Image (cartoon, rainbow, N blue to C red; front, side, top):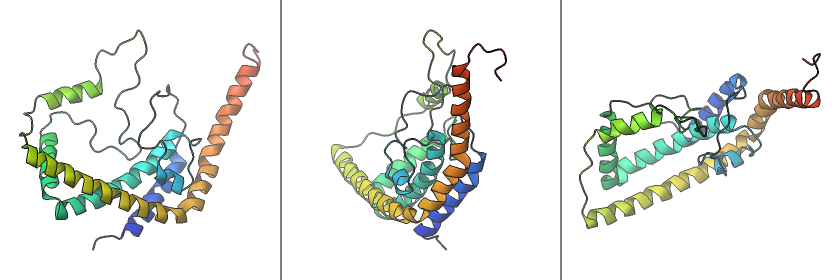
Length: 215
């Protein structure tokens, strides 16, 4: 039996709540480009996660919820949008033919994240994961061309899919309102103490950078 949307949202939040205690601040250099999935996300706003919460914590929840939206829209597309479904099937088959697929089977916390760190000026990479993935894609034949009428019809179906995705997203945001307290409690218990500890350590090192007795 297909799970209700409410059940799927509940399970996604519960999975995120089980993961949050394992979160640790990143020790590597931060990225310059903002995450388009999380920046200004109405999903995160619905559960009261602001921009001051570390991105890794935001991303773990927004990705889980996006997977629900994607699945619901996929069912709608399969039933109602044949041209778009055909294009998606061809693209999926093309992707399966790639010899290198580094974005598959990632944990939700890493889905949609950049494959490579930001380059350091003057220190170019010998190779990048994204570059290797692009090379694997270049080996495949292109998708067959579409007529102008087919392109117009496809654009219309894409628009319908987007409208349905927005409708589902709004419904999910309403469902997420019931999880605000548990989400904010988890952030207060597991995330904020680690951030405060990092800030305290940074303050101590700035106050006495040359003190031999400083820890």
